[in-house]
Length: 246
Image (cartoon, rainbow, N blue to C red):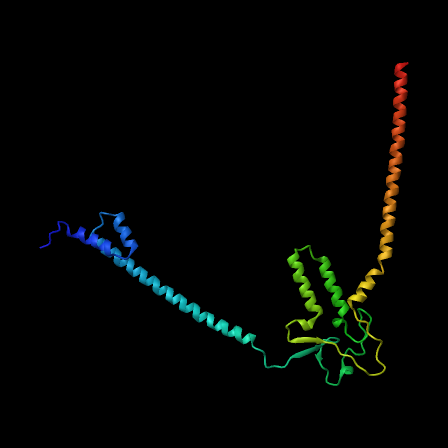
């Protein structure tokens, strides 16, 4: 026969001592009047909830793994080199290159550009027109930080040097050694652009000097006028002072 006076209380004490769940222990310590039946039901409910949450976590991990695998497969296929041959584009007509019947069969070979007036390329492929458009966009853009400026310079360098980009379409120039060719095409190089910019500097400096000279002339005229008014004011003061003493 059991010698314990309160069997339920002793069972609850042993249950709390050997229980691995912190929630069950906290429940018993916070509510000392909790019966043994309610404590057992609470422990079973806590165990069921923990098991359900663990199952849900495993299902979520399996779903994420199954979703990531096809994405990685597509990324790997995109990184692989294509089996198709590279395509080249003519810089003068924007058509396919090389031309089937040689460089002289280029549609723009005997065409004069309506933008720069040079021969041998279409207006749509004019290198100077593209550069002028880029400079105009740079002028109209608001000020930006140093980081943005580096990004824009990098994009401009990629546009001016198409071979440095990773595109499958490469821009190429072609020349012909045939006779009776159109007038030679002057390349739009940084040296030519810099020389054309310096041609207008003398006139610009002269205009600035003329404006400064006119400004100085106006200042001198104003100073002389103020000095004359000051002298007249002093003379009137002296006359008034003399009249007072007389």
